[in-house]
Image (tube, rainbow, N blue to C red; front, top):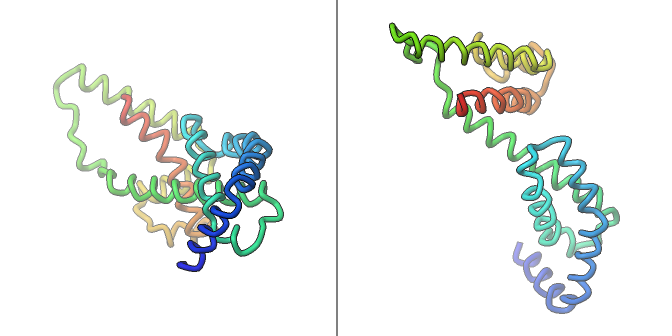
Length: 182
């Protein structure tokens, strides 16, 4: 680790002008493609942050000192894919922390407005569930309704543990939006 930092410092002092121009050229060349790649996999408002974070990781990568990257576009795409995985894992952890059992939700009671709002929210959730692809819906329902663990879901569906996490995060995002925005 210390050797990597020293290598980065030596390279940044010796090649500050050429390194900056090389990085700027890589950015000009590969940022549009990276943006297109991320647009297929991430929310629109996160694209700029993900591109920037990918280039920050690229510029500070210890592997850059050890050997020049032969294909910066592929390397940047790998960094971006890892960032997306990190964000999906974080989203799954957060969703489990916020999860409230249906049994713990108070019933609307006698208030007709509250009953109407509750019924409306249930309709929106059902519509969202119907738009999920079958695998995502099956994973989500197995976890939330059947109470299966990720391992049990993985065994039943043939997915990996990370695949189960991916489908849970994919299902939770739109449902969380419904919960927050009514």
